[in-house]
Amino acid sequence: MSDIKELIATAISFDAARLAQEFEPDAAAMTEIREAALEVLRRFPDIPGACAVMSAIWTAILNDNTQYPIFAVCGDLELEGELIFGGSSPDTTSWDRGVDITDPSWNGHCWVVFGKFIGDISLFRTAYSSRSPRRLQVWIQNMFGPGKGLFICPNATIEQYGLKYYARRVLSKREIDGLVKGAASYL
Image: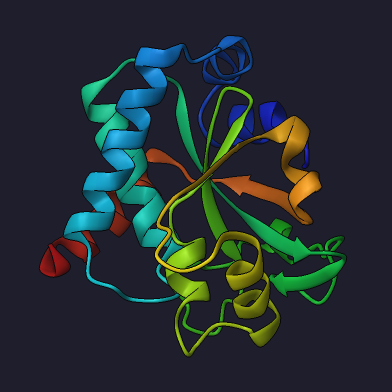
C-alpha cells in the first residue's frame, strides 16, 4: 500500500498523519470500530458498489464519536495480481488529476484505515451481488463463504489473502461530509 502517512498529510494535516502512524487500537477500540461498521451495514441498503459512501459514513461515525484517527482511503484493489477495481494499472497517475469518486464511471475502491489495519465495509456486499466482477465473486465464496459483511485485516498480513490495496488518496472531511449528506436519503 502507498505511504498512507503522506496521503493523510496531504488531505488532512501533518498532525493527523502523525497520529495515524502512532495509533495502535486496543481491544476496546477495535470493538468500537467494528460496532460502528456493523451499524452502517445494518442501516445502509444492500447496494453493491457503494464503497465510497459506506466508507465515508463509517469514518464519519467514528470521527464524530471517538478520538481515533480513522481515514477513508480511495485507490485500486488487486486480487491475486489482477486489478479488480481501479485504473488501468496500479501505477495510474489519474489520481493526481483529481478523480471524482462521485462520477458513475469511476471504477476505483474505497476502504477505511485505522492504525495498521484496513477495514473494507463494502467488499463482501459487492462480491455477493450480480454486479461484482466474476473473479471476486468466486474468490469471496471460496475464501469466506456466504453471508459475511466486514473485512478487517492488518496491513502486514493482507497479501496472504491475495488482496493488495493501492492507496491513491485520503478523503478530506469536506468529501466525507458530502458523501454522508448525499447518503442521508438512504438511511
